[in-house]
Length: 87
Length: 189
Image 1 (cartoon, each protein chain N blue to C red):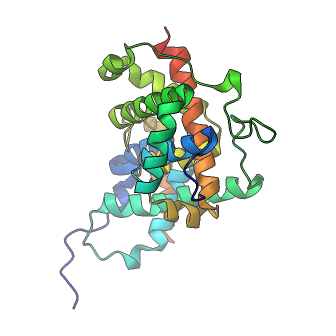
Image 2: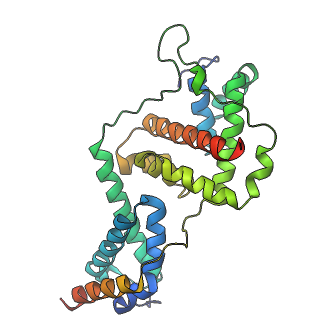
Image 3: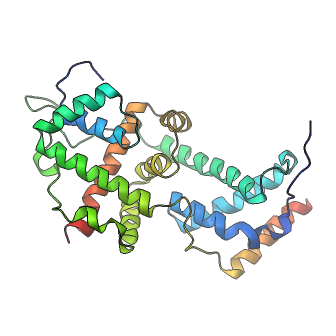
């Protein structure tokens, strides 16, 4: 990203996205803060983007628990595995 | 040099002991049941072939998950190579006087002040799951790797052979779509 201080909405939202992962630099954050003073739409994006992050942190997990193989499928799967073991 | 193995492999019980866990792990990442089941089976086969590399330090399940992760990345690489590699952002004017500004109908609109309060609601889980499922496959995988798996940007770029600027475009598109989807199905209701 360039060194200019005034950034457009496209650049501002990119910094905002990076910032959700703590990957925006100090300089980038400064430019973003300044842009948000002037731009209502990006202000809204920034606020809602943070909500998306919170929702994901709260409700998305590395592993869900609601899916299962049927017992029949497990039997077949185990047979396939055991066949390979014997080879 | 060699440490005592703490765990042993027991392939004759893998289906009972680990299949559901691996299945759930996979389904959140590939979102198609049949495909997820295939990937789980392939993981077991690969694990059998790699048995000799198992040192017994990690638990059987941890070891299987590490193989499964490779399988999922392989799958991601496969679908990634099928499509064009340059991503465009689409939410902003691309040239002219308004270059880089929001395209009016794509700009966010207010959610009111209730948004923050609703986050704890357990029903929001199914709303966000549905929104995630609705993402194009490639956006979903990059978004989940970054957001849920906490992969480094560099790691994802290497694995999927994309540039960092491409990654941030994909993240933006995914986030913007999720934002919109939550707006329509949750916050604006």
